Image 1 (tube, rainbow, N blue to C red):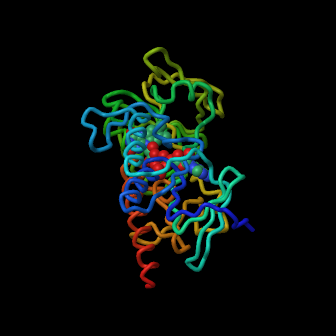
Image 2 (cartoon, rainbow, N blue to C red; image 1 turned 90 degrees about the vertical axis):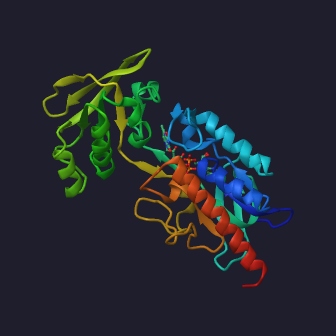
Image 3 (tube, rainbow, N blue to C red; image 1 turned 180 degrees about the vertical axis):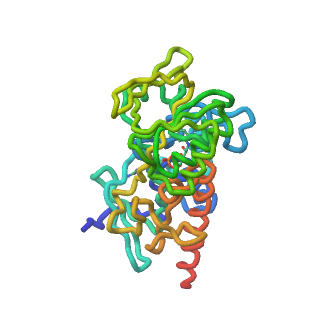
Length: 320
Ligand SMILES: Cc1cc2nc3c(=O)[nH]c(=O)nc-3n(C[C@H](O)[C@H](O)[C@H](O)COP(=O)(O)OP(=O)(O)OC[C@H]3O[C@@H](n4cnc5c(N)ncnc54)[C@H](O)[C@@H]3O)c2cc1C
């Protein structure tokens, strides 16, 4: 149990500082909820790990991920959001509409009337040093985000599931040739998606194949060396883009056994809402969205979460 004495009490605490968390903060602050954002260990979230962001409305010339996230933070702070560097380590949520508690950095507890969870998701990577070296310079974990930069070029994508299949067909519309690198001798994707891949002329599927190294120079990626794990034969693919589509992991360990999740750990929210199974606790962004996973959709649900938090508090105050 937590020690109630001298615990800071907030109207709204926001866990996470990506586009979802900061957008929730902008709306919550403008509604006078005096939100506190705990940034987590990646202040600004996933976009701080990318270079160009070309698809967020409002930036006609594009923007770099880190600058865009500084802009969002500044906008949230302009309305009085208190942005703190801190990591939520434990939660105690009240099931009956009471006060919620969040432990920060394993040392301090805050209590709050409403909690907005915006802890995002983490893309899974192969773990190759060259993958890290060229991340943002030809290596990407998001075809929808970065495919455009490889228009008319040859690219490779790794993965065998529905997302990989969908991203391969997306890339095939933009790129000249798409190599799909599949570790096993079959897809994990649904039949419909496999059918789509097989019927796309410019996708070449390489089964039983693994990535050995991503090759490049000052301009970024210029090839990928793959190996057939049966024959041990290696092959160099002349590609300028390398997409990793082997899944994402939602950052939800903290909420296990507390909030409803799907089988892969994404938080489940009510239909057309960001409400979780606990009154006063809302979830937005990639942590509850395994379909779109975009900055703009994260921002959209961040807005929803703040509006719902405000309405929840208003209803509570008026005794509804
Ligand atoms: C390489 C790359 C390029 C991308 N490019 C684009 C693009 O061009 N356009 C686009 O629309 N989308 C792009 N995306 C996707 C986009 O980044 C995500 O959809 C978006 O960032 C999700 O926002 P979010 O706020 O839900 O979570 P995230 O951005 O994942 O942020 C999560 C936040 O939660 C914090 N956190 C996690 N756990 C805790 C905890 N316990 N306590 C406190 N804080 C915590 C983290 O520190 C982080 O601040 C890209 C993603 C990647 C990986």
